[in-house]
Amino acid sequence: MTLSHLPDTMKVIEADGVGGPEVLVEGSRRLPTPAPDEILIRVTAAGVNGPDLVQRRGHYPPPKGASDLLGLEVSGEVVAVGPQQTMWKPGDRMCALTNGGGYAEYVAVAANHCLPIPEGVEDVDAAGLPETFFTVWSNVFFGQAIPENGNFLVHGGSGGIGSTAIQLGVAMGLNVYTTVESEAAAAFASSLGATRTINFNEEDFVPICREAGGADIILDIIGGDYVARNIKAARHDARIIQLAFNLGSKVEIDLMPVMLKRISYTGSTLRSRSDAFKAQVARDLREKVWPIFAGGSLRSVTHAVLPLSQAAEAHRIMEAGKHHGKILLQP
Image 1 (cartoon, rainbow, N blue to C red):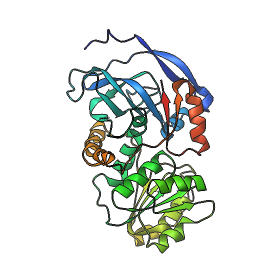
Image 2: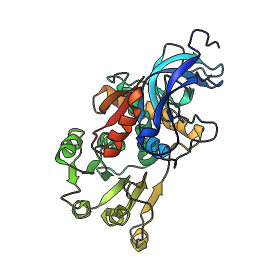
Image 3: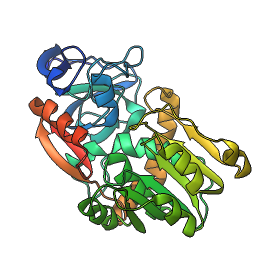
Image 4: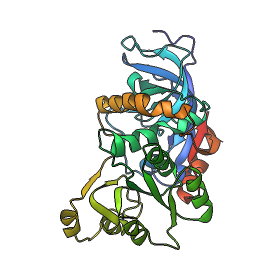
């Protein structure tokens, strides 16, 4: 493997300490050298995700051996390959889940954490697929029995996780209920196929879900008082999946209904999962989900594409919580 045809250095976005978006500054790093089972990607675009914001604030350190740079997903072109991988060759275009390092012109990624760009998706937009599709699929659908015509409650339906969950829920035959913050967000969620949008400023999702028979699956990024309310909204034998705690993780609740309803309550973070697990999810996505894009039932949802140099502004937009879909950065 030779990198002689590539520049020695690359532009990156670094965090100058911890704090607000203003700590994100432009910098320069040497190009990473791919490990034997990795590929080196010239980044077309990188996705901005909630964990990036948490890491910037100093609360989500990268795993051992991972890049300290932000960026958990990219799309791009293979420019070099490790000697032990046989999945990709230079010139291939794909999107990839990373352990960090996406906010850069180049990034080294495990070859088996990459996926081809789905049919009908532009290269730039594909950067917004891996993190949310890996996350939602691995937590909600991977290895799980999905109830026929079941009710799926998705909180935060206009964001990256929410918009992905709505689409996958519809594609898997579920009735999707989703909480949103405005009429515009409701219209956006409806355009993705949501059965019922619930403006949380005007309506309470608990009685709405209970009237529908209860939620079979609940995907929550809110936490706080939503924890107890999710239990009330759940049907017997439901699954509640916690992916984040935007309103806090310390709550006082009555757990008796969890026992009486036989509720399964789980949560996870994707970044800390093993490389082998992520490779399994990638294979499952490629086999069961990626073909759905060709029929138009799934699509990429991009809110904005900003230059890499404006990473701080991208974080401000995401923190404002008014975006519909993914925010991307382009070197």
